[in-house]
Image (cartoon, one colour):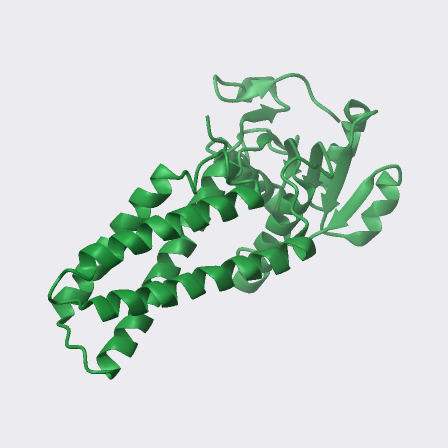
Length: 285
């Protein structure tokens, strides 16, 4: 069964190839019309449909987007060349045989497409050593994230649970690193509903940190950075835990209510707030 990361990676690769195919098609269309070939707007859309369909067929046969190749660059290269060969032969014999698309156009398209994919794979080879993205390596097994103040104090109270574990703490104030000196610590900008700019900065920072750390579990006591952490973690298939603050006596916090829809596990510190979706296991203060 494909993981969330595999599905996202396959989707990104498929969309990038789809865009590249269309760029190559329009470039070929430009060159062809420039040198006297006549096309109608209807025929170019037919070509788009045909080229994308034949590419899907060829990549399905050679498993270019499969779970077997998505994490292995060398296998992606091999599958790409096979798919390109199949695709260009189909384009040449089927489009080239159509009176609306002369064989010269099919040949032009073949050359442009081949060059486009060669350049894209060369760029991939050049970028890979810089990115060093290893899907198996994890910088942290647990990511513990909370805002400064009471949320951070409550997170520190469960530190005995982290003993002997590979944990990285995250908050929005650098000086808090002193309170978790035995662990790795990162800071992220604070989020604010009143400032779109701050919210976007926090989202980008938390997302980048999760992609870098690749934790198995994200645990938070709130508030905004923690909520963003479990939301992004859920999308990426990471186990997420929300512990609602003890200050919320009468009902769950607004963030806690949102967490009910995203977190794998939601805890309250008040027994009367427990429900089938909210677990009570005592309090941490």
